[in-house]
Structures are given as structure tokens and as C-alpha cells.
Image 1 (tube, rainbow, N blue to C red):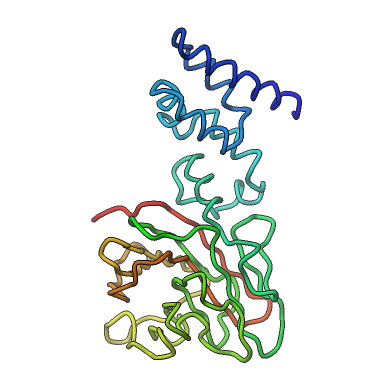
Image 2 (tube, rainbow, N blue to C red):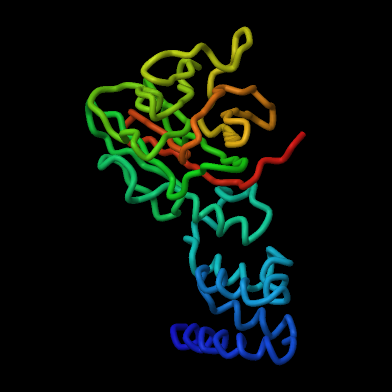
Length: 271
């Protein structure tokens, strides 16, 4: 495989020169591209419009299928973790936006599937994690769900790079300062700057979160809002007036051996 990948890269270099002399068949390009890594594919997409269309015209092409097979864990591909992603390219994008192994509490680890956080059974500690990539513009959506007990505090939301991802005691870590915003799924309270900003969703007898239930989070950096959906039901805008800084999807948990999965979906669908 290494030799084939090397040949593919050398072929891509040669193809750049060929691109100026005549258009290569899309099938030939797809075959060569299927050996390249994501950073190399990004460079290839800049060569000419033909190469760009070959790469991005079909998000389920052999190029993206091969990259998925090499980059993502088998568990992520054969289970329903990525079931709401329509293409191989979307699965690659979700992996790029998954939890960061380098930006989480020392008391958690990211499982081999690449998308699930596991909290170790450490007493008197609240532990969180941020994703690899944050957002300072555009509209973005992701799903998050608990696959174990919530405990006394289980918060989903967003955080800046300055927000802490670990603290002593069992507290609502997301929302504990002015660097994070969170929704505590246990008591349905919204949290920011160490204060409760009201209950959510704003309705009588709001249902409690059920383990395994997927919550969709919608961040709009143009309108500076954070909203939530449950089962494709729009629950409303939770936070307004967000700062124009880079904000990261984040969670915080307290229950030992609980697990939380986060999957980036891309631009939210309207309507």
C-alpha cells in the first residue's frame, strides 16, 4: 500500500504538468486521486476547474471511499455513529471536526472510533473536551448524544480556546465562566458566566433527556446565536449575542465511565 501511495503521489505531480497539455479522463484522475491523503487532495483541487470538479462532483466517489477506509476506524464506518451523514466526503469532514485528543481533560480519552469520549471514574472531578476545529464564521450543525448515565451534571454547548476543560467537584463546567455557553441536560438550565440564564426549552413540562437521544446543535456565527433541535424538532434559540471569536463544540461530564459522542454535520438545513 505504501508503494502504491507513493506511486499515486508521483503520478499526481506528473499529472499537474499534463493538466496544462490536455484534459485527462476523469476516471484516470479518480484512480490516481484515490491514493492521496486529504492535504494532497486539497492541493490537487487548486490545479484547475477540471480537477476540482473531478474531486468534488461526486462525494461518494472512489476517491472519498478510499480515503474513508484509510482514515476512519472500522467501528465508525460499520455502526450507526455516522448514519446521518449522506456521503463518504461528509464522513471525512466529520472526522476532521471530531473531539481533539489534545484538547480534553486528562480524565477522559477519545475512543478508537474517533468520535466518542469516555470519562474515567475519577471522584470529585468535572471533565470536558473540545473539538479539533472551531468556528468564527458561517453556520454549523453537529449532533451529540450520551451513551451512558448523565449523573448530576451533563452539559453540551460551545467554548472558546480559553475555557477550562477540567475542574474540581461536580459542576456545570461549560457555562461556568464567560468563555463558554452550555445547556445542562439534567435540569434543563442554560448556563453562562457562572449563572443560570433560564430554563430550556421554554415550555411547560419540558421532557427530560433520554440516554441515546441525539441532540442537534446549531451555531450561527452570522446571527451570533446558538440553538438546539431534538428529533428534528426545533427547540429554539438558547443563546444570542455570541462574541465574534473562534468557538468550539464542547461537552462536560461527571459520571464515571459514561460516554459522549459528537458528530459534525456541516451546514444546517433550513426549514
